[in-house]
Image 1 (cartoon, rainbow, N blue to C red):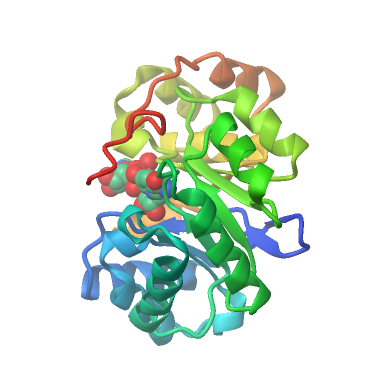
Image 2: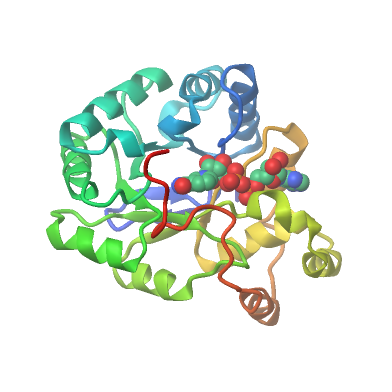
Length: 275
Ligand code: NAD
């Protein structure tokens, strides 16, 4: 079932599998990817203002035959738009670009030090105004979550983090679970590096599935939302073919044991905030 969901703390259903569109080109490329994904049965699209492809994403949604209310659209406020007023303006710009009148989930993209608390107040306001059905964060480690929750009226409902078998961060997953913050994976395919690793090929052969399908199924069984990126139709289709098999407990352990705390993306404690 492609539209399988996890229920967020406020009761909103968030589809387990989404399409990532980072580095998908604005215009026809991203519009096609979004339309193909929706035709395949994806009901969740993950974009961000900084990806500079929101208008193409909107075009893809519009030209698909799937009703808007059946699609879970996620966007993120960029580092240069932190602060209460700037975040509200950035949100409006994103809606305009996407040609939508509400979002399903709005995330603080990175925990810019000294700024994210004010940004969060803007997200709370957007949530109260029902312009967004859920609010959350991305790239928040435990200390940043704790700091945010100290001043927050509404706790983040989602934390989107780099996650794959080389970067599990089980302590952070457990912390999020305790606070009913849904964990979500970015770069679930290690930005494509996963395809070069023989240990994954072994599992793929064992289950007669592709490496991508093994790793995305791992996410599902961990209870982690996942958003693989592709702009190619065949890959978009095959990445979603993960609902007809189950990894054994020992293979889940085997994948967990690959953890080496290795990041392909930036470290939230040492991010180049000026980018
Ligand atoms: P990913 O792990 O999804 O890997 C994508 C790469 O794998 C691409 O090069 C793609 O061509 C290749 N690929 C995909 N399916 C394949 C298949 N079946 N066979 C062979 N190759 C395949 O990397 P990502 O794009 O970094 O992460 C996914 C999404 O997560 C992004 O698109 C974006 O939406 C989100 N993201 C969020 C943050 C954040 O800070 N919140 C950061 C990075 C990415």
